[in-house]
Image: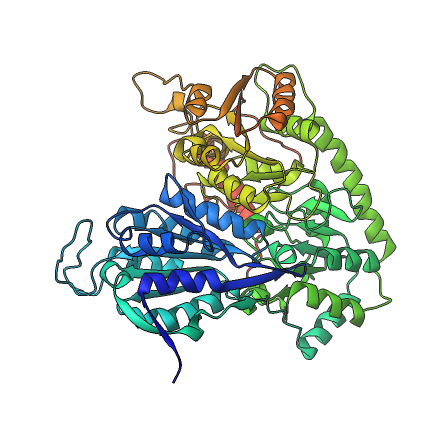
Length: 616
């Protein structure tokens, strides 16, 4: 008979998490770097006591906002290429539902995070408890059922022994490259404190390593045949390249075949920006170098990408009627999108075997030469918009240029929603893999500062620079205080265009009048004069205002030497964005309007829609 140990469910959960390991570059490390926790009546007694008991083996971190702490956990996993992760626990009610946005973000981006929200009493005796959401027609429903559609795996723990199979299933999802995503274990608050005799073997140390799926022989043959027949091949590198550690394999494959490479938001930095075959960003926020190749390509090798509409220009970018696509992806759901030839495999293994299969074949030299000419032309255009000017209000691009000149490419830049992702995707010149950290799958405003904190936890010895707009800053800035509290220094560049400048530009591009996006165009009695410098300083940061690009570069240099998080505020022009590069994006224009400008834009829209490729 196996030996047992009597523990509460919460104690068993935390002890189990502390025993999980991963191996990175030959070093064995804890798989879970810690647990973010904001306590309330639904988790302070059960999970709180258990986390205190295991605080050395499984550190607990206190945050100021539940959504933000989950964002930090997700960013930590992304920065570690999904090889390490974190958990987050909350009370029931608003504490739990504040995690739902973060769960959706992790789900869209295929990133691991373990969410442990408190839940109602399994016994139901005290019902309705404080913050309990009651269903009039279903006694089994709680607010935590909101997690079901945004979790890869969801379970509600109503008995203490259920944590054994639940954690086994959770770990399979969190560590599987194809099914990776958020796991929610909804912890009934009374069950957290209930005891059970758990087998000691349940707490044995286990090392989790990523599964590297090799391609099917027939799928490999078909992909190789299609590649050999191509005259104008193009590689689209997605986040899967980084997660599988395939950057070197991608470089070797591109150089051996002469195929130019372009990058999605998640895939950017898979190749260094200065590699001659790296054409940079593709799609709606793409470079002219990449997009002109995408328009002509007769074969697209899509590696580790879910082919989101910003990548495909709403499926109007690929204009060659003869274009075929190979979907090299560990997830079959993504590999077969839009009638692609699926090549279901780990990116690194798939590239290696594809390289062996087509050894000796190269893309036509005219096509490769055409690509390098396009890159040179794009560099010229990019240099022009990145350069400093004497404009009263600089553009986002000019701020990006200042950051790059002052800090170089050795930093890790973090950003998420608004206009910055488009400008950075085009213009940022990334160095090593992982140095460009974008959350643009869910495009969640408020991710930036919390995400930067998670990146800094993953890369404590690196300079982490967060670029954020004033609208996103105002939504979620509390983790500035957390970064100071934890001694994790960030450099935050806050671009203040006095509103939601990106959506204002999009609104105007559809023929509409500027309305309710910039502060001056929203209903107001008095426009607030927001002192971001004073606000950031009140949270414990060093803060400064840069009145020009030259002052910004000086402040960035100083920030590098500062001993704690620094926030640098710079006013920017809300109406200016980089016109070079880019591609049409399907944003529907009203079919009927009293505004002549909207009617004219509708005609343009109807013409553009005809360019879309139909597929499944």
